[in-house]
Structures are given as structure tokens and as C-alpha cells.
Image 1 (tube, rainbow, N blue to C red):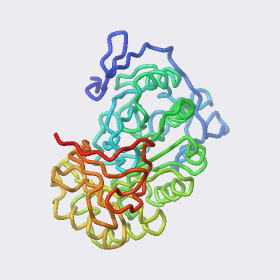
Image 2: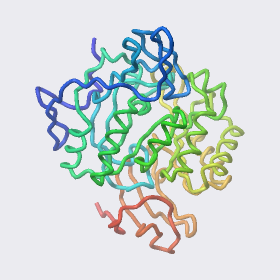
Image 3: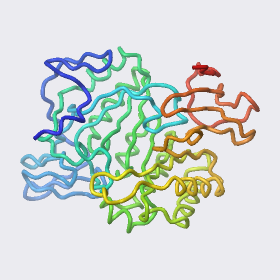
Image 4: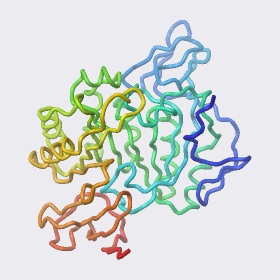
Length: 373
């Protein structure tokens, strides 16, 4: 049975996404980057910290990079399984082109095994079990350009596993004046990450916990590799925001949250927006309870006490949790209701009430607005 309920685009010979219409391209088979050939037609993939040694005819941990007769191929290059136009706030990015739309895409696959994954139907599925289309980077960028959407977002699953596709799209998008952003778990090696950074305008990275016991038990990853990614993105000038999903009893220790916030302040800067997100029971953790709102409020207070300037609470429908507050005068400079901006009081990167700089990446013609609806 194919998991096609997460295939966000309707197709009957053509693909329609909002105002976009896609024609099929030919099947794309693309050699992977960042691997070494070994004896016996084995290969060593070095795209991510797993550094999988893959035998002939086998696939790496991610399930989408296959050794075919001693050559490593990406099985998802030019094969998106999800395309959708979203508010940029859904990424979540609150300080990058607020109020704009992002053309979002994903392919099958992930290089982590998070027990709390919200998109497990596509991230943890086999390539053969999810519907996808053939869409070259040129076709995708041309259609995005036609829509007038200013941003392409690599999201939903883990962009690292469709790295070659993301990089080729990003290069073309940059030439076309389209911004590139990604939402990632940050589990990628330094060399490919630095090669991507010149084409990447912003990133939201999931810092899922702050100790390796949590990472190895619940994600099969390593927190030190994610911390390295965060420092590289900051050093390379990519606008950075961080999401921390709080799971009851697993990563909600006040001491650990404080250590994480201190690390973010010292290594990424106190201006880095931090999004605490509420957990809802799903996938392999259906037995847990949702995160208490009080826990999220506690985490936010810790982050603010540590000195982080912009702290948000997500996945909770409570007024004020996602507003941007001026750190100087304390007034609301961006008022949000879900993914909708109700009021904007940031012009040329400054609070219109007191003139304080509000860190972020703002559209050149961003106006101060008040939505009376």
C-alpha cells in the first residue's frame, strides 16, 4: 500500500500546485556526491556523520543512496514526493521575510530515526512505497519563478538526503533572485554543508535535545554533529533559527534547557530566535502525553533569563506565544495569529516605536502594517 496521503500535489498526467502546472520530465538518475570508491565495488558515503560503507546493490542508512555496481546514486534526485506553498512562518522562520510564502518541497528519506517524527510516512518510508514525480531543477525553478513566490524551502523530510537536488535547485534559484531556506535536523558533514551555505539564505535547525543519551536513544544521531552544524551556519552568515521540541520526561529538564540556551547564546548569538515546540503523541511515542503548556512557559522563561532576545512557543493555540517583542521598548513589533501576521511594526529592520534594531532578514519594501480584520 502506497503512502500517498502526504503527496501534496494532484496529478493526472500534469501536476498542479496552486497556480503552478508541472509537466513530467524524464526519469533522472544522478550520481551522488561526497563518497569514495572502495575495494570490492563497495563505496563509503561521507555526506553525513554516519559515513556508511555500502556494498554493491545495497543502500545507505537513509535508504535513498544506492550502490549500483560500485557507483553511488541518489534515488531521489529530481523526485519530489511533496510540493506545497506555505507561509514562511510554518518552517518556522519568524525573522526571515515575515508574511511571505515559501514554495516547499521534499523527497522520501531521512538519515535519522526519530521516534517522534511527525512526517514518518515519507521520511521513514522506502522510495518504492511513496508516490513521487520526476521534476528537474530547471523545471522546478521556472515554475516557482512563474508563481512569484520569493522563497524555496527544503523541508518536511531531511534535506540532507536529497542534497544534490537541493544544491542544484538552490544554485538556479539564486540566479533567478529566489531565496533558499531549509528546515533540517543538521545531521550533515562539514564539507558538504559549507558548499551549500553560499546558496542558502536561512535555516531552521532542530536541536532535539542537549545530551547524547537522548540523541542516540530517540534519534540514532549525535548532538555534537548538530552543534557543529549550528556553528558553521552562523559563521557562514546564514540566517539561523533553532527549534527545540520538548518531550515530557525526556528532554524537559530545566538544567538541560538552561545549558542548551547558554550554549546557543555563546555559540550562535543572543539574537538567534529559539522556538520551543509542543509535542503531540504520534509515531512511536503515542504513549506519551502532550507537553504541558506550563513546561513550555518554563522553558521560555529560562531562555529569556539566560539572555536570548527572541523566544517563541509553537504548536499551542494561545495568544501571544508567537509574537515578536521589541527587546528595548517591550512592544509587539510582529503580531501573529498562527501563521498569519496581524500587525507588522518593523521597517528597515527597526522597531517603529523606539527605533531598536530587530535582528533578521527583512524584505526591502517591508511596510509597517496593521490588519484590522
